Image 1 (cartoon, rainbow, N blue to C red):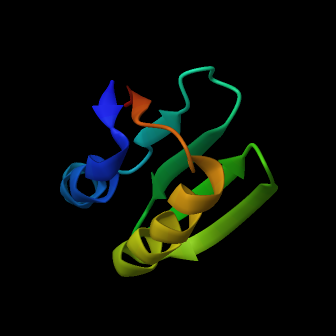
Image 2 (cartoon, rainbow, N blue to C red):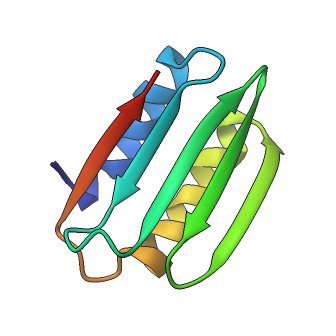
Length: 88
């Protein structure tokens, strides 16, 4: 589990470490909402599953961080702790 306030800081570090096909999934405590970040080649894919179900493809690292900042407020507005799941 991670603190919600450290989400962007942690994601910035993890995006640089990711290899092709790696996935990072952030979930609420109840696990009813999630955001998945997947690296495919040089681009990233962000999948929002919760309040809305939207997929963004072909994003750069900077675009992912900007998108996550907005999504954090939508998907995890009152969450203090989040589950972090990594898949390689």
